[in-house]
Length: 76
Length: 199
Image (cartoon, rainbow over the protein chains, first blue to last red):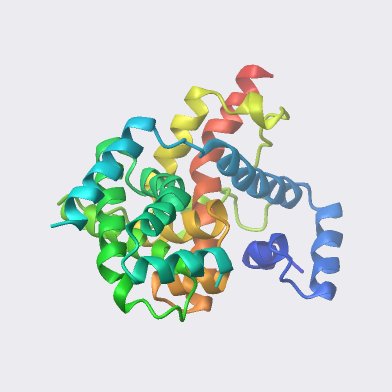
């Protein structure tokens, strides 16, 4: 597997949807190819950071306004 | 369909407003979060939240439960957000050719690529980084952003995302992969510099 193929298969790899043989090839390539190793790690890191970063709680006043709005609109 | 959702949906369909409110309470946080990620504006997100649940209320009588309630709800919410983006009148972002988001390199050479700071996520995620990440998300075309948000941030499966977006599973996978590559590329300059600056 070459660097270009790694790029194409990366999502399948991290989603656990890549054929086991191709997984092995990809991991073997990363042992010898430092740029690909960094690319894969930063690709994974991107997703982890987004999962952590995006968690705005619903403000209490937005919750209250939503329920008022629905009570009014749904009874029209 | 989740049993508890199903029971509440049936009650709400029979005119039980309290059951409808219970469904709203259960999902309002998720819909608001989706809208904030899609629209990056509190007022627009609140409008989208209200509009989505009003559509849910009005559509409940025709909801047959072929998909789960939550997938149907995400479909409505995503469409409301996409409509809001279209109505903003600004030119929607276009995804550049993928090469633009990949490490640059000379023919036959390994690409020049720097690692990101080796710090725990909670330290890496300061106010400035979060802002950069939200800016990058906003640079994705809305249809790509929606797939990334539903699939990677809300944790829907490929099939549920496909249903919520009204596209095929291969289209979900293709958009998701491109969105992820673009986000990594958009953030790499920032995090690489941060590594050099912070050591």
